[in-house]
Length: 367
Image 1: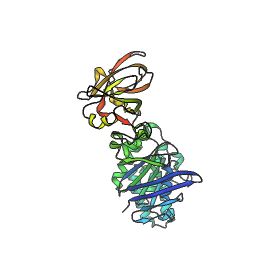
Image 2: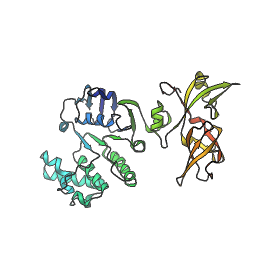
Image 3: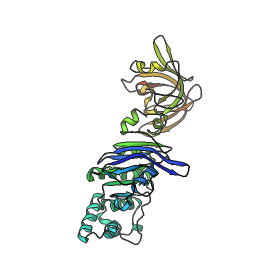
Image 4: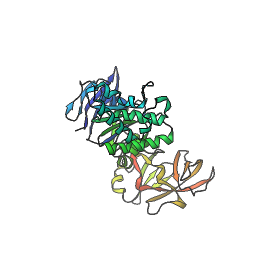
């Protein structure tokens, strides 16, 4: 069993609590991604699991074994860092084999494991080269290969794609996802890039200020954020937020931001009515704000108008930076056939089926 369990784990650096009461159960063969901004505690959590930092309180289990006091080399884990950390004077083969040689693994077994890992990663032709003869993507694959040959119970990845260019990052994250499927073991991955998290993870743990905010599947995090932070962090561009009031009149419920009013669909009224007359934070994603002329069929739409401030043509879509009547800026992600100019007033169809409301004080989702 290569499950991993964090039980009420704390890490303190003096008065700073870097990890605050972290409790997570990572299932065997799961691909869990820690995501959050710099300083949120995600890398510290990974280092605690690896044994590179000492736990202040709580315990960590790998399988059924508590590993708090187990040395890193005996935890049956392998870690891939942001830095490739390859020995420049060694060949790719020797870099991948080095850890096995230290363990006095038989030469035949080393050769078999290295060649198998190289085949999985498509670097068989690079085994005789030195790191200086490799591209950044090739070096990263060698670093991953060095971890694979150890055949660990758990793979740990600490922002391994940060040094790669955008195109290579997309290609490499697809390769890591394939690798997880082939190896059928537990992957725990740390990144600040929510796109990496959404595309690779079976579950995502979102952290902020050392505290776990929410853990769920990528789709459920996107559809049902637990609070304003998760709603804003997951999704690109991020969710739009407006200070608003829920207003009820003539049996209808409306969101009133001062710059526009939107009717709440009947499906949401029973749940939202409890907050009628109260201040809320209204959240709507850019992809749920459409040009009226090109709105998808069968959405629960409510219309509004806004002025175009900036346009960004992306080829398959257009990002419109808009200004509401009360000078609140927000973003819409619209059909590429839309033709607008700066300063134009446009009519927008908002898909209220995917709207969210949050408590303005606690920032927790209300419905």
